[in-house]
Length: 68
Image (cartoon, rainbow, N blue to C red):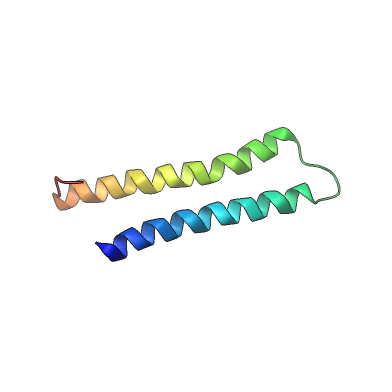
């Protein structure tokens, strides 16, 4: 259980850090990005986090775990 928790925390941190690095890289580019591009880049980690949470819930249901 501790390993699974570490995996989820680590993946969330890595997704967030990657999105911020990508965002800062885009903001430093010569033609400034459009606001829609910035919004899409910020939405990606949120979508990935939601995808991971739903996947975790589905796996938990398939295993038959009721608690949590």
